[in-house]
Image 1 (cartoon, helix red, strand yellow):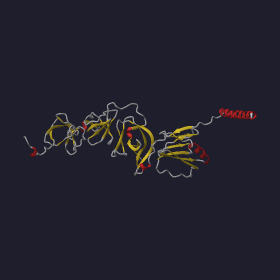
Image 2 (tube, rainbow, N blue to C red):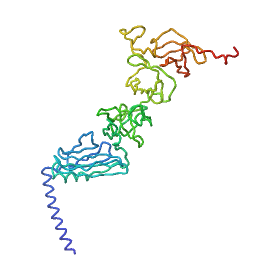
Image 3 (cartoon, one colour):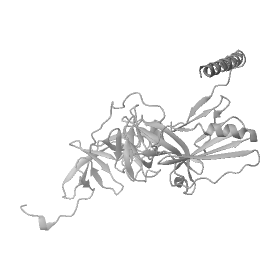
Image 4 (cartoon, rainbow, N blue to C red):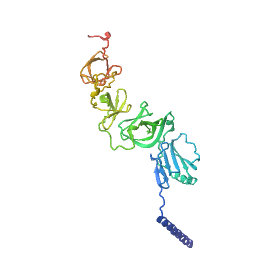
Amino acid sequence: MKGKMFLCAAVLGTVMMFCGTAFAEEQMGQEAPQSVLYQTEDGVLSIEAPDDGWNVVSDPNSWFVLSDGGSTITIDHFANGEALPACAVAGGETAAVYQAFVSTKNEVFAIKGTAAEQADLEDIIKIVGTIKVLKYDTKTAVSQEASKESGTGITPVNATYYCVSDYLNVRSGSSTNDDVIGYLGYGDAVTVLGSVTENGEDTGWYQVDYKGTTAYASAKFLTKTKPESSSDEGTDTSGSDEYFLVYGADGISVAIHPVGGAMYEDMEGRTYSKQDSGVYYCIETDETFTIDPPPADDTVNVEGDPYGDLDPENADTPASDEYFLVYGEDGISVAIHCVGGPMYEDLEGRQYAKQSSGAYKCIETGEYFTIEQPPMDDTVNVEA
């Protein structure tokens, strides 16, 4: 037994000597190529290529693409229950195709490797075999159902973005007409599933994963760079019924009030986001407003209109010291004068906004006033 063990040890020593010599010769010559590990942008999967001849390729129609210039490995991302792509067949410039699926509880990853040469197929199979799932409980697959609407599509993104607004509405659809289902605060992280397109054009909306639900948010306020600090300075977080005037580039004023965070709202329900620069950005109209009115342009100073573009149906003169009477429903009169655009003020400093109906709404009390005095009701004319 000892003789056999010695013989085995001698043989093993000889083998190790030759292996060591071969290894030394390889080290003296060209070094063996080093494998390269890649991850999907959202960190869900990893895949290992045998050398740096393989590179990640940008393709808006696919979640992840790896190629060496001839052969290609494509991974697409689906929610469980969605229809998976049909099997591909080799042909044309593709000598062979290898397909596989990796599934988690929530998602399916469809993998397709196309070989430029038949001999490359074995390498593709080995590379696909290195795929590892790094995150098992994700729900970031872009639903194909969202692109069934006519002309509407989703360009996959699948990456973490950060909110740069103190109060960003999250909606059920990619329109300000869709219901608000929640909001994001400054610095909040959210997974952007894809960019919404209409007839191939970017719409400025992202499809996001909001608390496990597919939702939508404005792309203007989401960035891949995490904000360094909070945007609390100059932010009203309480919400208030107190309106104040802001002015557009054309000099027309709008009365807005804070609704929480850095978000404001005007009388028509349009929303405004206060920026770090101090301007107020109207999300619906893409306009910016400031506290201070722009300087008057004398070239358009006509007929008492310093900006030349006031809406005569909703505003009188831009500003005037001339008071006139308006009447409430109880017949009591109030003297007001125009302070700019559709905004007026009484002797007590209360503000009034002229409505499209011609009535004047008191911002502080919510009452409506008209130019004409209402008729007296004799049934309540008592003690007078």
